[in-house]
Image (cartoon, rainbow, N blue to C red):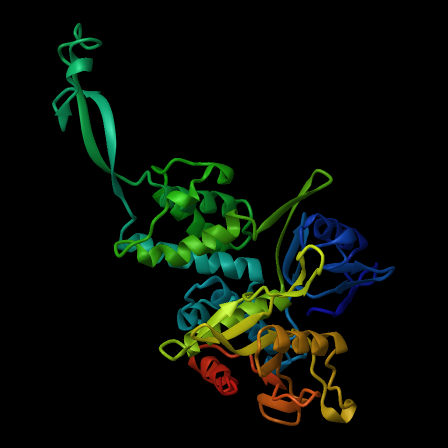
Length: 426
């Protein structure tokens, strides 16, 4: 779990020192690792401590799965709580990536016993095999070839110049229904990439079958893929999930690393960003069809304008703006932190800088309704929802509420989010 420590050494219940060294080396190569990889793993004398990044770090001969500390689904390290946490994380990732996950079919495959990388590969391969059974997308592609019979249109110029001495050949221009389109090239590149990474026998079997299915599609380097040429319409919209997953593997969210000549890899996510995206997408679905809309990382107003030059400095980016028309009705900042019960102090674990930031938002965006949203846990005395309401000093109408949300899936999560929308009158 994040923030937990794992001891290493020569004892039977410890991981070997060589494994700790390789895992830390891989973490240092990740873009999310920061200085010496300490944003992922802190390398102590006898322990590795996970930080606020979750996912999988793997090196030759070893791998480490870091799961989020989600107390609402079980904070202990029992097998059932680990499966529940992995289940919650997969659904958070699916929501953040805009991917539909069929919970029933995935549970029937007993995917909870695999670590996160294999789970994501399993989601990809199962959905891809189902899509391929319904038909691989194809498009008509213009071809030019010398054939033994006319097909399409005759290329008169080529026929009576280069083929003048070969009357048995016919220069043809024709359209052919072909799988050699960019969407299939992206999927093929993802399959090739994952064949080198998956260790699961079931995933390897599906990847082998898919490799055979895509044998006629050219293999293209991920760097050479033309993502901008892919257009999804009514005929291929069911491939959106697969394209999103392939993008994760090939377009930067998947960090492949090399550690001193040894190959390693990391599939990592910053929990505070994942929580923000998960809440924002849930709010968009919850408020669909209402007078409200959701803007993620919007606003971008500046705190200061220099008198002499008019230059603006200190730009703000609220996590989530709830809009009513073109006016800000409510501002929500998500915090992947632990809100403490009031018995532990009147501040409830809220940092002073977060309060100052919300006060600035109230002024800049002329918004009276402000919310700091935390993950719910069992020690909070109230049910999930608003835990405390404060009036901001100064005689105005601005109020700041502290709220918590359980990390659920589906409609219940959206309904819980909708109850948090309490904009002041505009």
